[in-house]
Image (cartoon, rainbow, N blue to C red; front, side, top):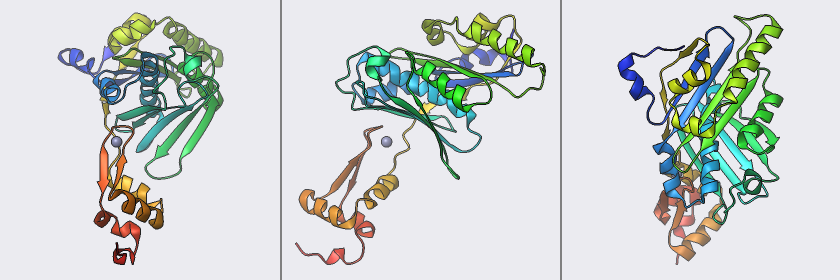
Length: 303
Ligand SMILES: [Zn+2]
């Protein structure tokens, strides 16, 4: 039976809104995580005009980013990027260690397909662990099978020592996901028994329908799948849409362009604007905002 570490009064509230919830099988070395995205997802969709098939894939990508950030052991963010020859040239989702998500389907304005292989055919998936301090790590796998989840399974098979499986679902309003992961042997040391336990929980998870993944709260889902296994469910962690762009960051990006080109742009346009493609925020820079970037001597240029 699913056991809660929150009180009953909090249960309904705990299973609503944008959230991720960890759980632990108490008789096996296996952990899990579920994610439900609601307004965080619709807020992201409201910024763009994506076709239904694109929205669904973006939802799955966002849910996957939240699930994978549970592997972060430090402050930072997890970034998923799918590049393809299909109708979506670039699909991207990020989740920070504090639960802020953002995502985009770049160049997908004309995408109308609903099948995975038409939208993201002949592509690759990059999984980047980007710590605030320290070295970035990136793994790349081909987009394979007929879904993002199966492509991620390939990544886990290649990169993780311990078994990891993922299930994803999204419609135009919600996105959900489920992750199962083996833990180092502690409770069960016999390899055959360990493998049997892993196959057992994965076989049950594989019976979940996309509609169930979207409809059911974590507690209901765990009851539906694992009512015969003791599972400990932890309090939810909030997830929300928040873009990480800022005036300082766009200014840094501008400084990479080079003073003479900036000077040309200023003369041509009068000011320089930078739009964030994730949230549509516009940053506007006048000449006096760019003096540091333009460098010494540029103030003396006469018009
Ligand atoms: Zn932004």
